[in-house]
Image 1: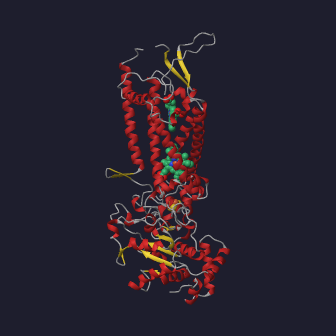
Image 2: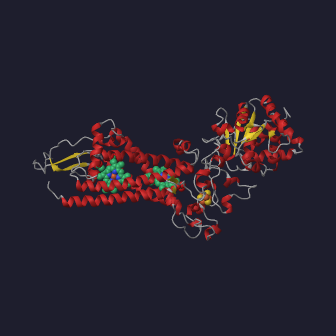
Image 3: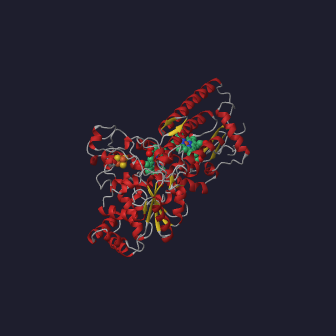
Length: 241
Length: 357
Ligand code: HEM
Ligand code: HEM
Ligand code: SF4
C-alpha cells in the first residue's frame, strides 16, 4: 500500500531511545486471529477433503461398528463452519478495522503507483532489482495474490455450502442461501469437480505464500512472520538510511 | 372422441371395478407422498371433473420412456392412464394412424384450447431447420411449437426432453435441444431419467390430470415429490459408505458383500431421482442393488461428464484427459519445483553478496 513513512524509534523505560528501529502496528488482533484460525481450518479441510474424494482403504468388520467416512466428513463440515464464521468476522473487520484490514478485499487497479509496484515486486522476485521496496501492509504483488486467494476462498465456501445443502435437504437454510449454485451448474457433479479444483488453488497459494513469507522474513529488511503474530511490522534498517 | 367424460366413466367403461379404482387412488396418493385425505380428493376429482386430455408426442428419442411407462407396476396405472392417453394421441401406440391421427391433434387444439397436457418424449433437433427429425411431413420442432401453443402445460419426459441426452452429447451435430430451450412461455415439468421410473411417470400424469395443476417443482423444474433427494440419501448401501467400506475392484470380496460403490465411480451422491426408494420393475431392484454404480442418467448432460466409472468430471485439455487431482498435483509440482529453484537462487545470491548493509 503506502511506502513506509518514517517513524521514530520507541523510547525505552529509561526514556532513552532504544535501538533506532522503526516499527508500526499493522495487523490488528482480529486479523491475526483470523489468519491462524483460517490456516488451521484449511489444513483440516484440505486433508479431509482429499480423503472424501479418495477414501482410505476399506475398514473391516461390520458397518455398524465403523464410522470412518462419517468422521472424516464431520471434520470437514465442522472445519468448514469454523472457516465460514471466521471469514464473516474478517469481512466485518474490514469495515471497522484499520486500513490494512481492508487491503485484501479490493484491488486499487486505478492507482498507477500500485500497478507499477506490482511490476517492481515481480522484478524483485525475478532477481532483477536489488532491493524490494518497503511497505507497511502487503506489497502490491502480495496484495494481488492475497486478493485472488480471497476470491478462491469465497468460492470454496459458496460451493461447499451448496454441496452441504444436498445432504441437509431442499428445505434447509443452506439450500435457500446457496441453492442458486445449482442454477449455474445443474449437475452437482460439476460443483464437486470445481470445489475439488479450487482446493488445489488453495494449495498452490499456500505453497507460494509460506515460501515467500519465510523468504522475505529472511531476505528483506522487514519483519513478516512475527508481524502476523504480534501485529507489529518492524523495519530492520535504522530510520534515516 | 369422448368430450365431457370423466376419468371414472372411462375406466368403468373399460371394465375396471370401483374397488380397484379406490385402490388405485390410495396407492397413487401414497406414492405422491400425500395422505389418505388426498386419496379421497383424488377419487372425487376423477369421478366428477372432466378428463384432462393428454397428447403424447415423440421427437428424437429411443422410446425407452414409453417402454418404461407401459411397465408401470400399478396394474391400473398401466391400463387406465395409458388408455386414457392413447384415447387422444400417442403416435407410437395408438390405433389411429396417418391423417386420422393428425386430425386428433387439430381437434384437441380447438376443443381443449389451454386445457390439455402436452407430454413430449424426446427433443427437437434445430440444425438445418429441424430436418433431422421429420414427423408427419414436417420438422418435429414445428409440430412441437404448434401443439405447445394451446397446451395448459408440458411434461418433458426423460433425459432427452429435460436435458438433451445422448443426441445432444458433444458435439451434438443435429443440435438436439431440450424442450425448455425451445418453448419458453409454458409451464414445463421435467421428468428426467433415461428412462424415468414408471411409477414416477404415472404419478406425475395422475397428479396433473386429477388436480388440474402442476405438482410443486424444484429449481430445475422437476417435481419435488420424486426428485428432491439423491440416490445416495436413500441408498441401502449408505451404512457402508459412512463406515468407509468400499468395493475396490469389480468382483472383490466387498462387491460380493454389497459394499458401497463410491470408489467404482457411483454417481449416487450427485444424482436426484427416486430409484433408491421406488426402485424398478415393480420394486424388484435398481442398478446399485444389482451391483453396479449409478450412472447419473437423470442428471444434466450425463453423457458429457466423463466416464460412468469416475465420480468427478475429467478436465479436457490438449486432447488428454485428467482428473482434478492430476491437474492439481501437476500444478503443485511445478510450483513446488519453482519454489525450490527460487530458494536455491536466493541462497546463492545471499552468500555471494553478503552483508554490505
Ligand atoms: C493455510 C495456510 C495459510 C493461509 C490460507 C494464509 C493466508 C493468508 C492471508 C489471506 C493473508 C493476508 C492477511 C490479511 O491481510 O488479512 C496472510 C498473511 C500472512 N501470512 Fe498467511 N496463510 C497461511 C499460512 C501461513 C503460514 C504457515 C505462515 C508462516 C510461515 C504465514 C505467514 C503470513 C504472513 C507473514 C503474512 C503477512 C504478509 C504480509 O505482511 O504481507 N501464513 N496469510
Ligand atoms: C479451504 C476450503 C475447502 C477445501 C480445500 C475443501 C475441499 C474439499 C474436497 C477436495 C472435497 C471433495 C470433492 C469431491 O471430490 O467430491 C470436498 C467436498 C465437500 N466439501 Fe469441501 N472444502 C473446503 C471448504 C468447504 C466448506 C467451507 C464447506 C461447507 C460446509 C465444504 C463442504 C463440503 C461438502 C458438503 C463436500 C461434499 C462431501 C461429500 O460429498 O460427501 N467444504 N471439499
Ligand atoms: S453405492 Fe453409491 S449411492 Fe449407494 S451409498 Fe455408495 S456412493 Fe452412495
